[in-house]
Image (tube, rainbow, N blue to C red; front, side):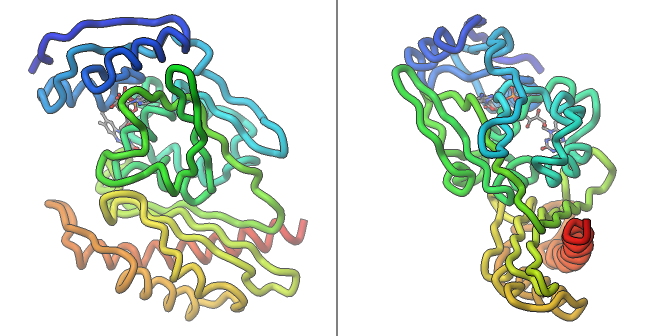
Length: 295
Ligand SMILES: Cc1cc2nc3c(=O)[nH]c(=O)nc-3n(C[C@H](O)[C@H](O)[C@H](O)COP(=O)(O)OP(=O)(O)OC[C@H]3O[C@@H](n4cnc5c(N)ncnc54)[C@H](O)[C@@H]3O)c2cc1C
């Protein structure tokens, strides 16, 4: 299929891109890697009057350490560049573990970190990881910018806090902090397919070996990344054990997700996957936190 006719602009600076986005708002679409937008346009599910191609905006393509141990990533950074960034595991071990699950290498060569986040597919890995990490997003528009926490950014199915005239320009991943262990787990029908279910887990161990705090964020179980806060709170102050992990997993499956079901997974099968993935992720995260603490 071919897309409906559209006007094409290729600004070479962020200022020019913001100007176009401000002028055309809802009538325009931003083009990053095109790996989701172009198929959607070819199916005519989106028919923007104008495409604003961000690929010439070099100032959005960067990954570098920030202040206070943060990592700053420009929205146009390709997923493959982030994957090859050697220090990524020091800043976000979850993202480093999750990126190889995102589609296939050829797609990661084109798709961008910002495009993946702005697209807000509930089955995507990066949104769940950003929520689990407590990332912040910088959104810019003509004459202004604002920072939005990941928890505020993802609003629903393919829906974010971005206004029609705004561009996601930068992501800030916070410092990992001491004593933290993480694990990203996912099940897909074939490697590279979208996840049937997945989880980004992190735990922090206290000095005596009990769990100080934990966080569990799920993908592909609802219309946006799901932060299972009540289940994660069950971990605080407890000693790690298979029984504890099973109880937490059961709580998530029974009370914190409402999978709609797809042609590949009934709601009950999704709940089963969530139980299994939660137990695996917590065991691995605790093992890594303990290894971190003994260094
Ligand atoms: C076969 C296949 C398998 C895939 N499997 C997976 C998978 O397993 N996991 C996964 O996460 N993804 C998967 N994807 C999606 C892929 O990662 C996409 O590239 C990604 O979702 C969108 O990134 P993009 O840079 O290509 O954005 P585009 O397709 O260019 O844009 C996507 C949307 O985001 C908007 N946008 C882009 N950049 C910005 C910005 N800076 N500010 C505001 N809005 C912006 C666009 O206007 C558009 O609405 C798959 C894609 C394909 C084709």
